Amino acid sequence: MYQTTQRAWLESLRQTLNPNDLITDPDRLASFSGDETRDLHHLPEAAAFPRSVAQVSAVLRVCSEHCIPVVPRGGGSGVSGGAAAIHGGLVLSLRHLNRIVVLDARNMTVTVEAGMVTGTLQDRLAEKGLRLPPDPGSRDWCQVGGNLAEAAAGPKSVKYGAFRDYVLNLEVVLADGRVIWTGADVRKFACGYNLTHLILGSEGTLGVITKAVFRLVPTAPESVLLRMGFTTLEAATDMICRVFTSGLTPSEVEIVDRDAIALAQPLCNAPADPDLAAYLWIGFDGREADFLMADAERAADLAESIGCADLLFASDPDQVRRLWTYRHRIGPAVIETTPFRDVDLSFPRAALADVVHMVKEVGRRYGFRTAVFGHAGDGNLHVNVLRDALDEAAWQGPVREGIADIYRRVCAMGGTLSGEHGVGCTLTPYLEEALGSTRLVLMAGIKEVFDPQGILNPGKIVETPI
Ligand SMILES: Cc1cc2nc3c(=O)[nH]c(=O)nc-3n(C[C@H](O)[C@H](O)[C@H](O)COP(=O)(O)OP(=O)(O)OC[C@H]3O[C@@H](n4cnc5c(N)ncnc54)[C@H](O)[C@@H]3O)c2cc1C
Image 1 (cartoon, rainbow, N blue to C red):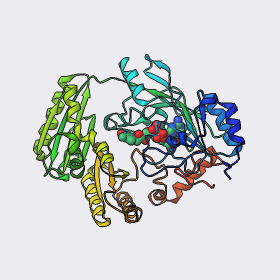
Image 2: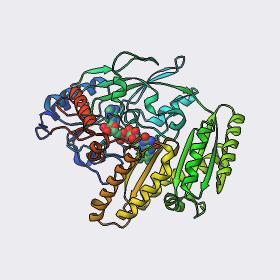
Image 3: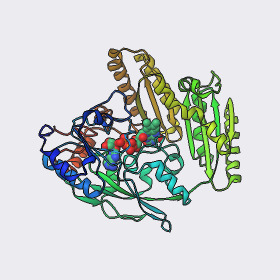
Image 4: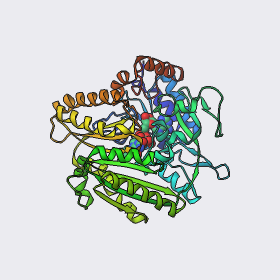
């Protein structure tokens, strides 16, 4: 039974942390009541800001002793409610653990504290000619620990893979305060169960990540980008499949659908042909501009042979930035237009046109509009379900039923519920139908081993008794 009402735990935390590193004032706690998920706010009783692994461990010992829920928090950029304290308790912010511990240029690895902002780490690595490639759109404020806890990715994952493909070892504080390393600082590791990958995507339910060791790759100083418009989703899907089967290795393959184009247009200051079903962006990066140019020409020839309606090309950094406009403005455009729910579908990429048609058909049936965009080359689309003028009854009733229908249908098409945004608390109700009860029983068993009292981020991924 959780015991948030008894205040002895707060007294113990005060003795563990610096005076300014524990807050209990509800006004100040408001900014820790959720993440970027709309309409989801749960005030915790307190928020702690430890400055060392020893302090994280001490905080967890106190919470374990008093059976207090602990919600690890990175940058708060999550979109599935993972950092919301839905059962109250303590929000544990990693923001002060934000240093590079070791940059080993010869072995091309970096050991970094989990609270470091991802974009800051990437900028520091770039100064040394090194790179951790996954590039989430939230890079300016999400943290390395949050990226690992969510198994995050980004546009460049289509060529380079996601965060999970770069992590070699993790320092993790367990629910009772013990500190472990999950692997070793080596590229190959064949010593039993893979605890590193078990922690990835566990969303703070199995332990608190305090350090990560990543392998790195060299920077890719040159890039070219193509933007192409297609009047049918079938042609866009054909292009996506053919760019890979023709032997090209694009660094980005992104899409924005017709409804998303219309939403973004007022912010983009650039006209878009109303007949387009979608824009597709295909990028190439590397060291040799000539090779990239040859790849881009091949992709352009392919696009024209498929009936591309509108083809633009950019190679200097300023042009490249401008060419991304529609893709980069769609997130802010949705936020400015209406409340929305985020649906993060993942499926075999050749099914893209069928999945978008399915989403639109469900929207028509249940009475809502959607903007669809995302990482088409990975078969990972972000469907923003738009509230527009829908009243509360429609938003809570038919819209939720429609979203459940989308999840059911994408699974029937060989896909799944989330490619990179995680389960949090928004997907928990749909998990059993998607994964089956046997897998959920195994997950609950793993949770029980790591966190027998169920204090770590309760109510996320697996239900734990309260
Ligand atoms: C504009 C925008 C663009 C985005 N673009 C992308 C994208 O391209 N790709 C993508 O994958 N996601 C994207 N996201 C989603 C989000 O940024 C990612 O899920 C990100 O990884 C969350 O990191 P965070 O540090 O903000 O974590 P938070 O939101 O703070 O937390 C996320 C989850 O991780 C847990 N957690 C955080 N830190 C730790 C830790 N140290 N140890 C254990 N558990 C921890 C929390 O408890 C929570 O369950 C985007 C979000 C926005 C708002």
